[in-house]
Length: 495
Ligand SMILES: Nc1ncnc2c1ncn2[C@@H]1O[C@H](COP(=O)(O)OP(=O)(O)OP(=O)(O)O)[C@@H](O)[C@H]1O
Ligand SMILES: [Mg+2]
Image 1 (cartoon, helix red, strand yellow):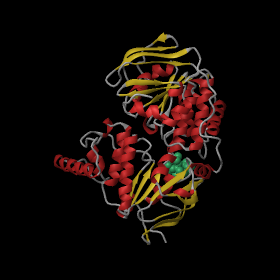
Image 2: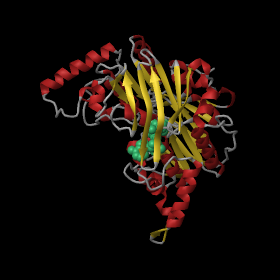
Image 3: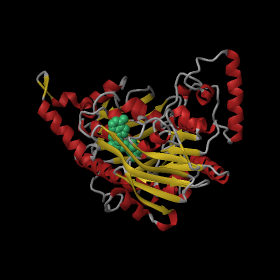
Image 4: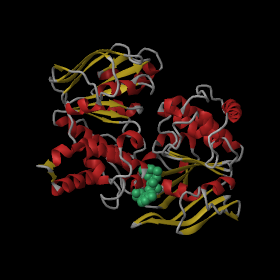
């Protein structure tokens, strides 16, 4: 018998079998990779383990003893710590407060805050964290740092099992290294680590054992060396895919859709470029080098000096509404906060940005609406029981697909895509890339930021690499390599 076992776990939500007689086991010191396509049941398994959801059937044993997990607090006391896929930090509290806050504790008094800061500093020291100020408010932190704080929050108390559910999806490369070193250390101390990621490279580099989920159940348990990446993908999807990237099918036209000259504000320094019809223009670099600011400026959410011309006409983008009116749409970084209205249905979310297009007279054309929604759900293989369910009940990757569907349906001339494949499985990524090409084949254009260098090289016509708020290099033709993107990202010259 293994040290940790989840046996025959089933969980239904309405008609959806999120888990069906799923098994999972691990031993002390194991670094387990948990893989599966979007909606396969990974997060639900984790939620069952940590007492957020109650299984319909099955049992969980740790060191031969049945675990109760009646509440998340009880699960924590039984030795389970989880970094959830969706961030859970309170933005109006400081980092220290977030690290040690528990639900029943009311706002802290001054003295307590001092103590908390001390505790936080000790924690940071223990885990080698130097780039976060524990007195800062979480709302001021970029997404990558928030994710790091989430991880530290899980480490703040004792545990036997640590689950990282997509915890690297927003981390910088440097922080991924930091985390991996930490995971190796924890494994040596005999902790059980469960690592969930759609980045197979990460799974390959950190995990020793692999469990693959498909449709709510485990379809494979193996040592990492027994499987290569293609086999993993085939097991995840239940089918083979024809390559991870489509053949190039779009072409850059003469017409300039967007002309940007010398953009500058606190974070940007002299950014100039042209985006042509039919083009996918890549933006690379480590995150936090001005990319999100650039996207915000182009989306009218932030101001900057300089010139912006859309289809030859100079304009001021004073608000997101004015950007939208001029045909610029954004697929944002944080789908929960910016991309979706979580309590609304999948259908409402998808049509939200294109109400004008679907509107007939003053009434929405119900038929047109459901046809468009159905088409998008099929194209992107959005796993949802019906289009009427609340988008918040979808798995993380499927929520991301809804954001994409919403913007594609609105058919903007210029689509700003900010790391859209974060948390998306390989099969769907391929589908997203096809849709990007279709979009450009229609004479529209995409500005595409990605933290995945391979993706940039395969999908873009050319790539600007950002470093400290400026365009440091323009990689084209043969110089468009992953190596060059990385070199320029860290301040070196391309070769
Ligand atoms: N609270 C809920 N209500 C209804 N359905 C739910 C709920 N939570 C999960 N589901 C459904 O259960 C299935 C499994 O979801 P889960 O979040 O476990 O997938 P996942 O493997 O973590 O996917 P991803 O890689 O996208 O994060 C999905 O079809 C999802 O829509
Ligand atoms: Mg998940």
